[in-house]
Amino acid sequence: MFFHKTPAPARWLFPSLLWKKKTNNKEIYLTFDDGPIPGLTEYILDVLKDYNVKATFFCVGENIKKNKSIAERALREGHRLGNHSYNHCNGWQTSTIDYISNVVRCQRHLLDLHDHDVKPLFRPPYGKMKLSQIKLLKKKYQIVMWDVLSGDFLNDMEPEVCLKKSIKATGKGSIVIFHDNIKAEENVKYSLSRYIKHFLDKGYSFKTL
Ligand SMILES: [Zn+2]
Image (tube, rainbow, N blue to C red; front, side, top):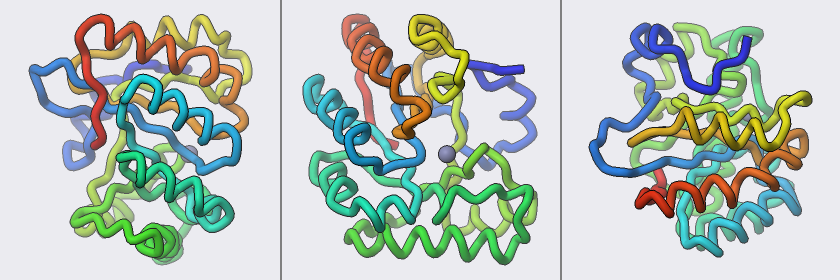
């Protein structure tokens, strides 16, 4: 079962996690998970630049290590970076101590870029975390989930459907996930600029978290 819109019970169960921004303004928070990846992340940065739109990138530590100049470019162009663990760690399959050290290892790479966030952002890979992991991480990090999942990474997702359903699920304050991940490349390349244009035409603005 796949939901483009996060079901309300998930949000009620975990109110300390950020699912959506409370606002009456026409604002959308675009997020990109899993990069930086040569080619695709740069394509996304070019699109954001064309529309003069800012976004948040939840980076995988080992990808920052391999592609540091792309992460630096994102920061230089006014985007925000968040932590997505060192190697896309699944919280349900990892002990709490190993999970925390995996997240800290990614954070060191972010600090290395001189990205000194007062309250750094963290998004759990697969959205999977144990309660003990949430409890420890939320002291230092703002844990960010999502309100709209574009489904861009799904094999059987048609690009037109990805775009249409993402638009339908988005509202004021939505936090939307796309991926700078090769699995999502076709859908991102089809949907992203159309999605942005649709909402700019409706008077929305795009902000970093
Ligand atoms: Zn991910």
